[in-house]
Image (tube, rainbow, N blue to C red; front, side):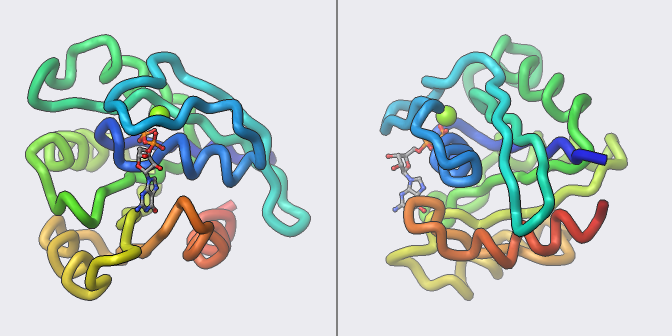
Length: 162
Ligand code: GDP
Ligand code: MG
């Protein structure tokens, strides 16, 4: 089985940066501009000898469009297609209402969800994790997508599920 892993989260949390790192491509658009990746994007990746498919999404922006807007819709479809979901959170921003909306949706999906605290570079990782543990997550994976730090530990656990 080749597992399908969806990257979801608010715009600008670092989904495309992680996608590019996992797929070793520069295809996904990365920019400091919320909401740039509007369509779902699929890539092939491998971790050791394990192959998997990763889906990048535009993100869910709770403030402006809620769960019904076009970007949210394609995130929902990515979640539907996925065997596991990486919920990406921004350690610098902390927990936002849009994150909580998405977490609520994910709870109703009964898919494995991995909580990822991205952008832990330059912040106190323990403080960031403590904030995100408020969601009830069992484990928070600290990550610096721009440097690839934390990717191995995360993907070890994700792929161990399959
Ligand atoms: P997306 O909208 O979720 O796809 O976010 P992007 O991958 O486009 O990243 C948004 C911005 O955050 C870009 O400027 C990235 O370089 C930056 N970014 C992504 N990951 C990290 C990280 O681990 N640390 C820091 N400091 N910035 C990051
Ligand atoms: Mg993106």
